[in-house]
Image 1 (cartoon, rainbow, N blue to C red):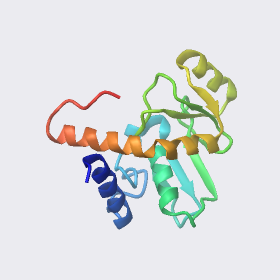
Image 2: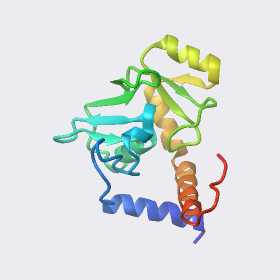
Image 3: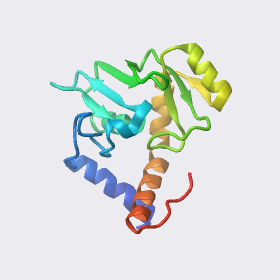
Image 4: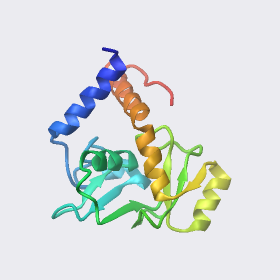
Length: 167
């Protein structure tokens, strides 16, 4: 089996088996373990799935959660505004796909803005495309294979003490 396919399969199996990673923003992202303090402007919360919200570091990990739990539709999804850091409604946010600022857990960044003027200024300064939440989520799912392989490659390189590959 090709090593990249094997890495994706192993990651998927680990997620399905329940990795035992943290499940609140105090402890870190449920799927990758990244702490809220390290995920900055990309932290998300999925509400209405149980007693506590599910905290994840990025749209990448939110997409993993939704893909693994298709029957558990969140009643509310919040995301940090890129500029203020305030949690805002993901569906009402103005999303920018791409641009020159590296994303969290992804090669193609996905940033949320509360105010359309802020999103337009980001586009002017950093590039990208203005999209809806649905389009940003679709992009996260489309990017999943490539992003997961890159994450695994970086972790293997870090474990060997090597310099991680470029984006």
